[in-house]
Length: 234
Image 1 (spheres, rainbow, N blue to C red):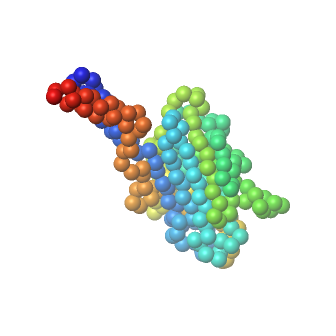
Image 2 (image 1 turned 120 degrees about the vertical axis):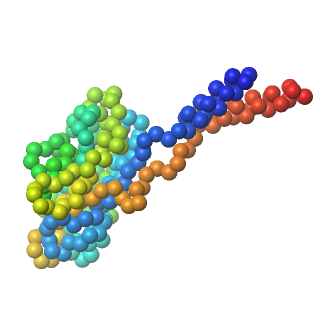
Image 3 (image 1 turned 60 degrees about the vertical axis):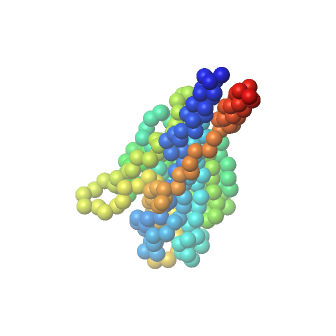
């Protein structure tokens, strides 16, 4: 009986040991290039959450924080970091939902750089002038899931945490995890903006360990065993 109790409690402890960070929030808030009306405000957030061997994404558009220059603006692109393993294909992106659903195109490890950055993943959103209702505008959001191309390997939140450094000598562009393209901006200069961002400050990750149902069952077994032993000692 002692062995049963020890095994149950040990198993419970092991099941409550936290794994690597299972959630990440990227705050895209740093003005990079474009219209002179740009400023350092949050224009989008990208939240990654571990879901078994896959990662769930939630991309939220908040370009309204730019003020009146964003009255007719929309996000036309999202680029973000990935370490390249396991292999991803277009079919790795699935389960699209939200007010803005699947992007028009998914580019994996595209050639060249964008404003000096070589991001591994690039999602293109609608820019239609004939049907502007398709555009990704302020307050909208999109969700999706990313899984390995082989359907077996684990894609982890940590696979998306490698900072990307901009090329070019003497540049002061910050190392970043993601970039957004914003078009339709009003005001002086160009009608577009580019923003980059990294992990939110303070880091917004899942809180402490929460026992799983199996853990609770083991704890219950251990407590019941202790009660049984006390009863039979009398």
